[in-house]
Amino acid sequence: MIEVVMFDLDETLIDRRAALKAFLPDQFKRFGDQLQGVTFQTFEATFFALEKEGLVDKQKLYPRLAAMLGVGSRCGDRLLSDFQTRYPHFARLSIGALEMLSALRARGLKTAIISNGHTGVQSAKIEITGLKDAVDLVVISEDVGLRKPDPRIFQLAAERLGATPARCIFVGDNPEADVLGAEASGMTGIFYSAGCSWPDTLPSPKYSVETLVEVLPLIEALA
Image 1 (cartoon, rainbow, N blue to C red):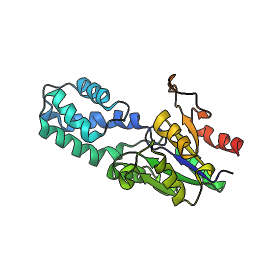
Image 2: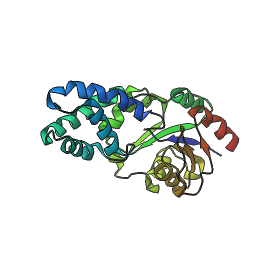
Image 3: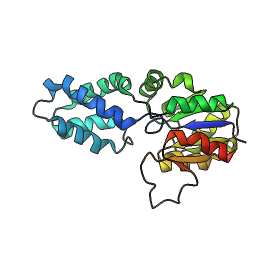
């Protein structure tokens, strides 16, 4: 019996790349006087190359970005502070996210978000996009001292909602951090592909969806 459906945040409930594509031109424009000699194309391309699809902490990324662009550490510090303050306002929900969460709740299921990241930035994105009121629980790695794929962060979330991992489902885009991490905790993992492929080096996922619209029908089928 399924009682809880949990989700990753970035690139699952939130379209991370779309948010960055909107934020980076804005940041570059506002820091133009400190980025003289750097083109936006170089700024954006270097940022995406360094961040490795969101896996690199921005506190490490921006100092590296500043060094590679030759703009100095002070500029890197200012860019990081600016990111932490302004980026959440550019957060974009994935198509159908709120509707899907509402439908799950309407069927008596509890919902949660488990996210790796810094509390201030992640909490702001969750608040600004309306996700805070759409779920029953939010667990952020910095708050609890655990990061996906550590099974304990999934187990902690289940415990806080009064459920066993066996009665929980986790949906996420990262094969190792989200799907395999959830399965190691005793949950059922669902791969949210959004057009991305599963690595050939890992066993194929048991369950996958390409859109959030598919989540509820799959859960009903599993139930």
